[in-house]
Image 1 (cartoon, rainbow, N blue to C red):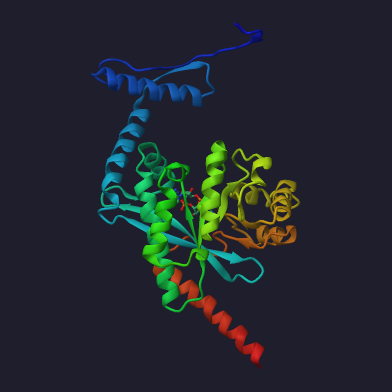
Image 2: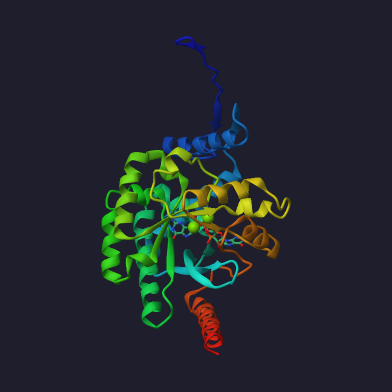
Length: 326
Ligand code: C2E
Ligand code: MG
Ligand code: MG
């Protein structure tokens, strides 16, 4: 059809549920039809899909997770794992990323890739995120008090937490409560914050004034406007794993080089995510990236295991200091 002189094409994506097989109430049937509609969209749009057994299983698992999540904080089912961030040339640990782990008594270990989106959909991410922030700051301060060299802890923040009116206040309260110096906290946000740029800019600037660092996680996979990027107080770009993976196929990968140059020119720190091979590490160093994370150095580990990793770094440092004295 034509709207105000422009030609507009519309295609339908249809989801179908059947009574009584898929549900007995209008609400249930509509929900199932809705899930089936998303399947049509996934399958390339412009078509129809019936609600089916797989969708039904997916739906019941999601409902189980949604219900179990409500009690997870209170029942102490969450643990934070830590993955070291290392200086690529020396393998020295310079910080760590806190990654949430959930062990449910019946469902077992559930991946954040599965439960974070559910927590976001239901709004539970706000209280879960608060727990994560406090636990990461508390742990980091405890390690500093125990005598380890101070490290930066990075905490992942969902855009929903960020948009929640009380975010700044929460961060401030957590820092006060845990007594962690603000310079040792870094927040990881994704490019999706750029959708609401005016508001995001204000919050980011306030966080910067507190002395907190900001990273853009999974950089290169979202919708960053380069124009906006240069106006925001961003300290670090984390190069998404998908780009690092490509270095194995094509070492001179121009996209990785372009991201590194972009970040360096904007005076940002670059961190490569998901480094798994020596080869990837070598090429990243050649391209000018100095910091990385990945299984090559260590998987995310439980706090007690992270402490062992820190001890190795402290020992190395001791050795370096000794050899300097000789
Ligand atoms: P992310 O923040 O980009 O974290 C990196 C993910 O890559 C982690 O997965 C980490 O375990 C994994 N990874 C690190 N190095 C390697 C590697 O060399 N190879 C491979 N194959 N994977 C590697 P994880 O822990 O499953 O977390 C997945 C995502 O869930 C995170 O991606 C983050 O977006 C989200 N997430 C985790 N914890 C939290 C949290 O506390 N709050 C929020 N909002 N999101 C979180
Ligand atoms: Mg992250
Ligand atoms: Mg990432």
